[in-house]
Image (cartoon, rainbow, N blue to C red):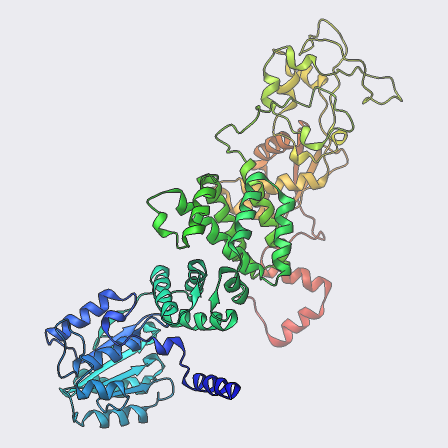
Length: 622
């Protein structure tokens, strides 16, 4: 008998169960959550008997648009309203509304009744006056779903309805409604409900349902709801079923697949200490638990934002988290500098924008994590960072060991201009070797003057060639070797005897040729465009190059620019013997085509059938 009685009670509870979103739906203006300004306006309009004939309630889903429309319809038909503008819930009109048998309130779903015939049927009903109460209220939900023809059929009635008719339109997409409809309505914009109001309402519901709930757990539910009370109550019911009435923080993040705050706090500590390996391992753990990379990077951006607002007491109110986690945000925010947070948020935002287009999404996120872990060690260009300032010595008058790394080859040219004997005396100086021996073989370091004087020794000071540095000449500092190591007040002739010019190839030549065209002024835009179509060819002497043009006008322009081009290339390629030659192409020589006619002529030489095709169809160039 006892088992049968429990089964009957459980069956009765299942039959009488109502979801929280319906069970705790507000029935008065005072119980509406998060819309205080709108409810006050509606109550004042009812108290002063200044009612409009058409209202438009618009806003996000689940914020109380339809609920306020029903409360408004119930209150204006109440026979004995209270002093504060609420319905009495005792008169016949209120009882009929509460029992869902009122004939004065009609609800129409525009999503399924969006044709002209449906609107015409509604217009026919509007003509019938109410039997009980003063007004007949028509609530049209999702009104943006009406067709254009239905809107046009509804215009006249909406503008001049009978005195007893009031229309309340509700929509989530106001921009889809015709302007002629908007101009005939009083528009009320509903806001998203903030997290604190949702948490407070959920605490009241949990208290009434005798459910144990941690504040942090309810805060996660409120954030997941994204400003919608209906969504929050639906998630609340889901979590209650999962936890059997004992809602904890861990159970909520497990059931809702929400990433724990702990991951973000650990990652931020790793970023501040530069632990790249730990960052990648934590991200791998997150992926193995089934979280998406886009969801992770979005949450990380929000975490940095919360840290930023936690630094200033004025913006602390923008932090929408629980009390215990709020304290952790305050502690970690003091470890992060504003500059670090600005750069971190920018990196996360760039990653979020590029995530959808990326083919290797995991690598994209991991690169972002590596950059974040290196932010704390970066220094600004305008300020000296931690540690001693690096002084870089010139490479053109000193020997570099073969096992020296490439970053050590890129040195400041400014160091050579200081004629102090301290820096050069610490480097070994090479003496010229006999034929057959390597010039790179170092001798014992000796103390010498930084700039050898001609009268002391007749031997030349050898220089390092570009190929011996094992690096591209494009990465060398843009400086002239003569100005670096030449003895002071020496004539140009002796300088040319002392220094060797660097060798270059055609690839380097074309690279700096393109670079020169990009540096031309707007007045030379036409010549820059022509130069981009040209390809300089290096001649046999390895120091001269030739440019082929198709007419005399272009040749004159190139000869006019030749001194500038030669000077630029000499400085960039570190070779003072560079010469530029310009010639007009021969009649049988293929030159890059510029116009459509020239392109066609070149193509027809390769395929004579094109000429026949042009003649048969009578084609002409526009």
